[in-house]
Length: 107
Image (cartoon, rainbow, N blue to C red; front, side, top):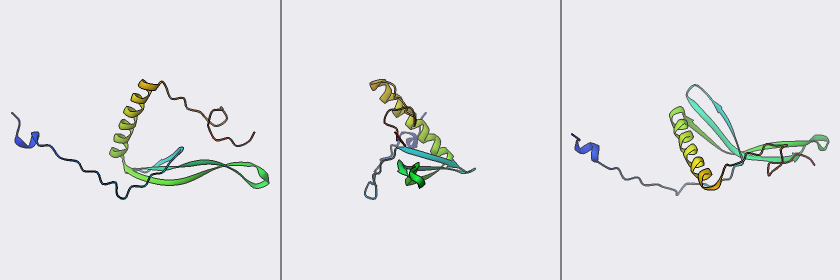
């Protein structure tokens, strides 16, 4: 037997009025016992001292989550990626030094 509370639906309203869009081509993760820290940003090749190539990680956004939220994010991302690859083929990951559109430090 179900109770009236089990059949009740909750309406979800999404407020995007304070949302900011950013682009990230890389992420840095760190964690504590209680939280996961996600730094989203851009890897940018720049010239360092003596014209040596340097890769600058410019952090644009930091998201701090508890472990349960991080697990839900991982599951959701896995589902989205799986669906994309089923429609479009496997996503190839290019690593620096392996060609493709990865940031290049020097020719």
